[in-house]
Amino acid sequence: MKLVSVRVQTPVGHFVRVGALHGEAIIDLNMAYARMLADQQEAQPHRLANAAVPATMLALLEGGASAMAKARQAFDYAVRLGKPARGPEGETVVYPYESARSGEGVRMMAPLPNPPSLRDFIAFEDHIAATSRKRGQSIPAEWYKAPVYYKGNHRTIIGPDEDLPWPLETTKLDYELELACVIGRKGRDIPEREAPEYIAGYTIMNDFSARDIQFQEMACRLGPAKGKDFATAIGPCLVTPDEISDLNALTMVARVNGEVWSEGRFGTIHWTFPQMIAHVSRGETIYPGDLFGSGTVGGGCGLEMDRYLNPGDVVELEIQPIGVLKTRVVKEGESKR
Image (cartoon, helix red, strand yellow):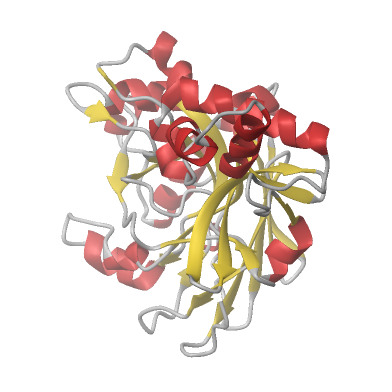
């Protein structure tokens, strides 16, 4: 499945709902499951659906394999019913995808708007080699001993087609082309061979960086912090592992104002997601919804080219079959979303 989160505006406020893409439509999984239960003559379909297929992405992930299996049942049932499908009390089950992208009553959000934690790795050898050369250094020997990461701000997640206000008066705003995985099971001391079972899905990640501020911080042997904590974009959807036959074959592309700035292949990664999971879970528990960024693919940022973003730029990161993660950089106060 290609899982998404949408924000639905109603007369009594807005609500965030988890859905799944089907062609040009978004199926509300919780409401589809409630409709299925109602058709089976269950007395309290909404109550049972809320427990079996929670209405938000994080709660769905926390429900584990059982909740995900029921979500697939709900998806298949709604597909069979078709677009006229309604909930037990006439609620909307199917939303037009284009309406969600344009924000007309319902709009796309980050697929996981509220991850419990964010860890971003530096797992591509080509990238750390390039950034090390800029400092007149070689790759540290320690990098080859274990996957290295920092913890980012999990409360500043932005989604697809969302504006990024120009941050912190930086003069070197940069994008970073990454793939991310989302954890789907709680675990500790996980062997590498079992780690793939803990991955709920994959999404595109743009680890925006204010390079001048980042390097000032890291000169003090800590960080990054303010140089990255202002925003991380993920989206447009969370693709379950069964939808990707060969992760290493994925092509990664970054465009700025329609011009290709970066191209790479995920298979060039040195530290794999299973290795990351095994490393992080040593003596530490990981939880559903934890977000792991791969780090920047080789050539996947402006830093490597001494080329940076400007207000008004539109950044598009593309990794198929996940899609395109689009962000517009705006001056403070200009954002409409």
